[in-house]
Length: 132
Image (cartoon, rainbow, N blue to C red; front, top):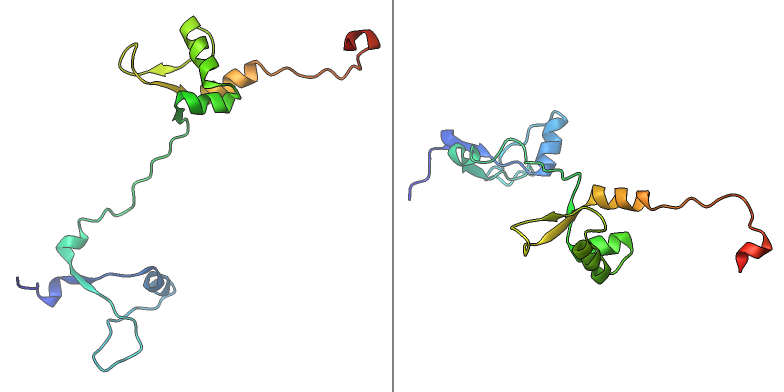
C-alpha cells in the first residue's frame, strides 16, 4: 500500500501540543537530527475529516429507573411498589411494550411523589396525653 504524499498529511496533536499551540507556540515535527521538539504523527487529511468537529453531548435531565432502583429512591421495598402498581396506587410509571413489558419510573415523578407525602413537623410541643 502506498502512503499518501506529505502534502496530504496533517499532524495529530496531543493535549500537550494543543496547550502549547493555544499559548502561541507551534509544535514542529521531530527532525532526524535528534532535536528536542516533540514528535508529531502524520495522518492523511481524508481520515482526519471523519472525526467530528466537536464531541456529541447528551444530557438526560430526567432519567428513568427500574423498579428496584425506584423503590430504593422512595425508601420502599420492590415488592410494595409492585403491589401498589397492581392496585393502581403509587407513583406514575412508564410501561414499554404492553402489560408484560418493562416498567420504569421517571426521577422527576419519584421526587414529586416524595414531596407530596412529606409531612411537616409542627413546632408545637405535644401535651403528655398525646404521647401515649
